[in-house]
Image 1 (cartoon, rainbow, N blue to C red):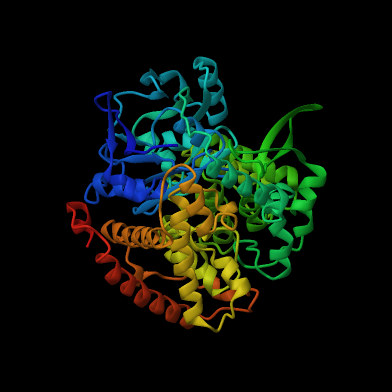
Image 2 (spheres, rainbow, N blue to C red; image 1 turned 120 degrees about the horizontal axis):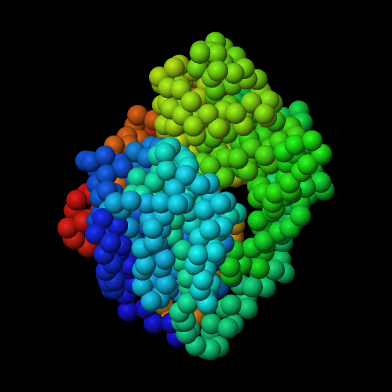
Length: 595
């Protein structure tokens, strides 16, 4: 059996170029993944100093089921977000989780700031600091290619890196993971840049035995069959998440043209079906997943007369929404060109697309002009959006420098807050379904639909039942905390119910009860709330821009007073949960600090 005496932590101090390995038995009470990462973040977070101070930590953590069972494939990153100033939480897949697992570590903790650009080589043999000055200034594609050529290894290898966006401390810069996945949203790439950390090569060259016990084999087989032989995950393999485009459009739930509309008249041209018929060339999967939900399209780029290059680009619903419907682009090749540009620079695609929606409407309304943009813009003008992205990276003028702080900052400075599609300081995801989605994105730990599935609650719950909406949002976020301790891909959330999780853990010698798991989920929920408050977030000061009430949803237009009422109920409920949660904790120094 897999015996876990403690959580194995690799602490890398970039300032001193020192490495420390520890094993924390106390952290096994939090399983792994987000549970462990939150505990370490509590210990190392720095609420009272600059977000880019070298003491600010970056934490990468995997869970006990990582690649041992199907679709347990993710790595969680926890950090202080440069974009919102509070809790940053992001997830990525492909080879990273498996590579970390086979280095022999559960969690990587990074503090300090290098004296000059570096990248790290991490394996079971330790950590090597590499000079990265020649890579500084290169995009994610080129730097990834060079790091692959420079670093050989017999084990499974994962390469994460930043582009120019992270180097320039653009607050919504992400971290590219194995080309087609990302630690997106909330600005982890800018933290890498602030630490002069260009990237990390992780070589999983170790081994780990889990034995051949019948219980493990039986549970693995049951999960595998549910994943591959039922329709629970079928849509993710077939069209992928872009299967959502047409249904959301039909129900008035697809944010379009800076949310002036919730219906895109050309949705059929950018649907999952359209991409599959005309652009899809392959599907790939994260290590340890049999599904293959990552859809790769072929982008045809003409660089001179009758000369073309063909570039593989990953796409999904959120990206098609952000740089397609939200800015009125209806040509698939243009959408792919914008995705490719954003991701090579190492920016977050959703944030960039939503910000460009605000830019376009602000220009239409005369709030910003030629003196700011130095170009003309209208919805659907793909070529101009590419210019805007380049101008942000090149810091062409003060306006573009201001855009590096995100949509909310720009709207506060120049005007147009009423139509800035921002909730909780964070640009929205690709849904406009109703009150549960509106509130869910505003209050979620990541200000994301991925925290609590508000968009799904809108489709299954009577919108007039306010108490039930709030209860479901909270219950779902608590449940997802359990999954994220393991760290299971949330596409498989219906596969891994509580009973399955208990059996899967028992199959590798880790014994938890249903009650213990639910208490863990609640404790993490409480801790996230306390961390956000400690970093300056106030749930009672959440504001909803007017635009969200001007555009109809699947239930018709929302009312701002109803939204405020729901927020009041939510705050009352979390006050009750936080009061109850205090008694769940041992009286440790760290816990007292947040109570």
